[in-house]
Image 1 (cartoon, rainbow, N blue to C red):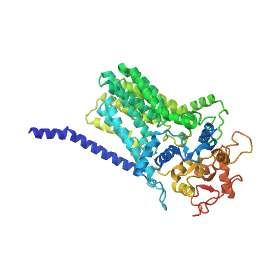
Image 2 (image 1 turned 90 degrees about the vertical axis):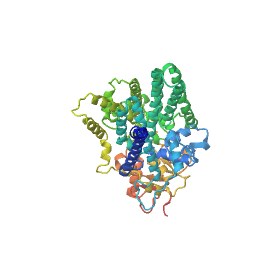
Image 3 (image 1 turned 30 degrees about the vertical axis):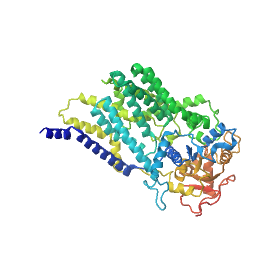
Image 4 (image 1 turned 180 degrees about the vertical axis):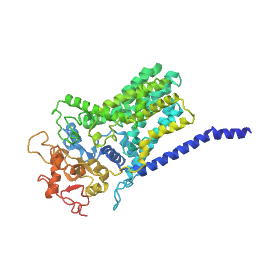
Length: 600
């Protein structure tokens, strides 16, 4: 009998039910991944995803931290820093150093691509269907694994802050947050950064609990503080703006670190500087800037450099408008956008309303109150950086971009929103106890409604054309040697799909007649600055669709090239790129070279 009782206990309360729950949840997660990908997966749709992926591939193939996507502004920075080294001008003959992306995510992608070695060519005779480009699907699966990790870490963090009920419902709502699934197939490092953020909060909560409850050894607390600094540094090397969190992290440790709080704060700050320092030094050595092109993010998309003008500038004029006035105007315009559009969407659903109310609730757990204070300070920092570091990337791909830092708070917004919901539910006297389960089910369904709609008709749009069409880009790139330089209005796509060195468009196609600040911002000037002739040009629907509407903008001359070729089958006299494919395989793309390279 005792043996039978022990067996029954193990089946009901022991590890067997836990193992069954884990297997069941793992199976459900796998089904959700398969179902979402079958329904809504699509190839990369943002410049950032393709840019970081091609840098990762370069690392995997032994070309160092280099890029095939060459920004005219990057050439300016390199030439300005290395003015005395003419033989090293812009480093285009060899590998061009990447100055735009922090190193953590591309390096992880490099390991992923090195191990699995996906196929980079689209099969001939097939359309660009969603399963064709293996590397992108591999990266999406990796990010969906990170999403599952975010859900698991959120569960354990919510259980420590509140209880199992809050933890389970938070995990269910989080896995049903459609916004995070869109990030999972975007190719962006957002979910990696979210995992780092949750790990950082878990370590800080460990330090706070240890000091408040006088438990855990001092050595473990010191290691946790060291880990908090390291994770903040890793986050900063995943997205530079994340590094600003070192200030609330240090303040939190100084306030709630117990008797060793000063040592803990200093240890975290030191670890952060040690991990960030070598990369900042590398950037200074290569370009004379601490964060490469990202150092100039505050003045991008301002009166000084509207939209993406700075990225396309070979000789940027930083004195055309008072810089302080330009920054103040950017702050005002972007603050309105963040307050009216971004903050109401915080958390990816209407749960942001519950979170907002939970800010005024005094929770019994002191740890929950203190982590909430840290969360609000992070919210303030993210709002400020999202306002001042916002660039054209947020306009090109609204919501799904790396500049959307508020999305990193989604797990904790959901946790505190669910905690408030349980608090309110406990105050309600239901006619029948069973109604509590119905209310919880209704709450979960409403929170996951955007995700449910993905599986309902009509099917979400999965095509990324226009402007990205891999067969056309690979057709354009095929005849060019890896050492030859091309140019395009989607150079990141040529670098990723075509695997060719590609420069972004200059501000003008040919020199202007007037001697203005943009008279030396043309194709021939780029060739002179980098010491390498542009031998191919690809214009996508991004430029072809502008027509007369944008003839007066800084890219008007490129619109003029399109119209001249469309109307007269000619190019400007200054152009050496005069020939396009004899057969027009891709009518939505204009391809030019010095001779017909596509005959065969």
